[in-house]
Length: 75
Image (cartoon, rainbow, N blue to C red):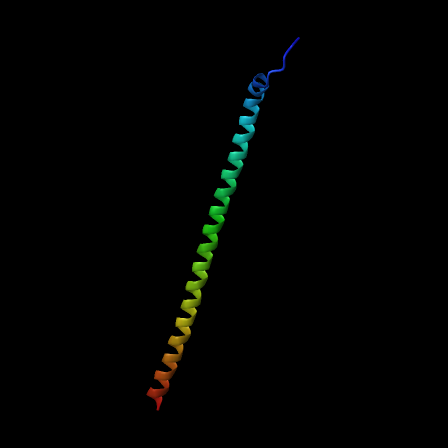
């Protein structure tokens, strides 16, 4: 009579389980790296857009001031 041993079954499955777990871990790490890169890119775009908006606002304020000073000079 042959007895079924759970330990022998686990020993046979263990390498394949470890390989699957390692592959899953690599996939998760890859996804996390991509998310980090994309979030960094999004933050860079947000900062650039904010700086552009500030620069455009400052340009308009400077134009208005120049127009005001010019009108005072011409009066």
